[in-house]
Image (cartoon, rainbow over all chains, first blue to last red; front, side, top):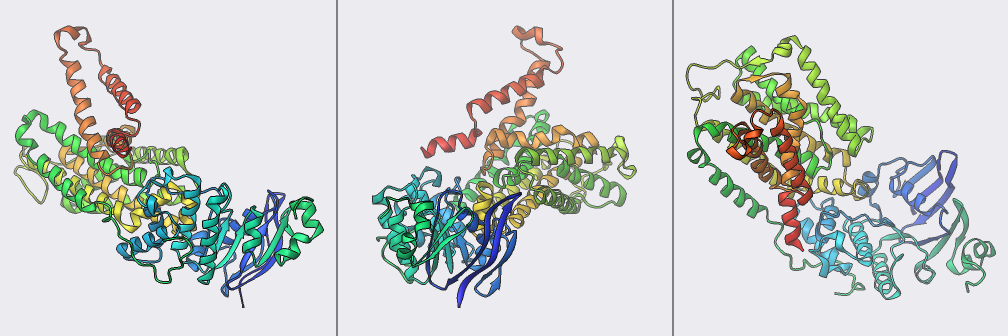
Length: 239
Length: 346
């Protein structure tokens, strides 16, 4: 059975259709990649899924529950959690406090919540920044923090919005390993990414979006060979 | 540990002890205990200033919860102060209710009013200056309301009758009694303890996360409206207690004393000067601001010889006071405590 089902989900802002009617089924434990040029509707799709934006039409089912029009907090509590492309740390707090905010939602006891958060901070490799103010982190650290907060909620499905963007290649490798290990634990992953090497290495299926709609969907190797995809996004030089 | 490890059951790493709530409670106890002796040191004539300062401090501690920790800038805390003050005076004169009970009733009423105002402001997504303006508008509404409501004696206000003898139940003592200082001191201590507790609690941490970034907080499963409203309710209740005590101490409350614009700024200024969103800011700010305005007024009323020409220039004290506040804000942009804390972190 699929974990997430979208049936004709769309989002319009005034006359602009940012996301056309999208129908999609994501089976449990899939590693699902999304690519597309800027303005293709990738982030809009995430915002609709995670409840920041209400869809203009369509229906969304998560784990057998209709989550259409749910608020973001309710969606997150249900186990569908997103990260933000533009990192949004709680700047008055340390890294550990940031993550503890998330784990408070899983553990009522403050002590347990803090211990759990510390374990997650360590897992994403931020242990040396544990007590640093989150606003002082470099970009790579903030990306890890976004991941850590999402992981602290122990999600069933995680929506990752460009967690590799802005990182130099040496910073990417450990994050890619981390994403693999998260997936290996049974978490379903949907991710938007521009770094094609990572997209090809991680995706089990790949969706290409263009101007708010699906341009191609399938196995990554098939999709990137698609002439339309090459024209719209990858360019002739990609091979 | 490398990122590739997949710990099925994460082992608890060595953790520094949780943020020093205990240290803060201890420090608070020491401060309050030290302040306990202030009435023995101060001349009787200075006691009213000390009591006023304590009332400022309680108001500011209340304001700071909502505006500092909650990030909802209130420019209308006079509403809650006034509700507390009028509840006390009205219940006492009309029904002979003990001020201690009225304090609680006033706090509950103010929390209710605050919840209603905040709910609608937040429901319609007012934020920042717009939120502040809306709260200001409500304060003006209450001001006009109190001027026109018959049972509140309209513009005449309510006099709290002076009793012939001391009474704990009615919160009245000899004019120079030290209890008039000690009682608000204990209230201030309790309000500070509530702040410390809240700042470290789950709800308080959520409130601060929402202040920093509401969208991110919501995406982590936090019910934004709920925790904002919890913060507002506590803030309004504490400020109302300050109002109730005001009525008891001055034995009078009228529209201006309860809902005047200056009441709202009285709640804001100590917190801003001391450090918004910090635990100790309002306390330090009140300790500076409370005596400062009195000191300036006193100095200008009885100027030393070389400032003789200032004699009789009415209103100048307010101007000097304002100028001093501006200077403090310029040099200590995050308030006295906030700026010091920031420098120490670096």
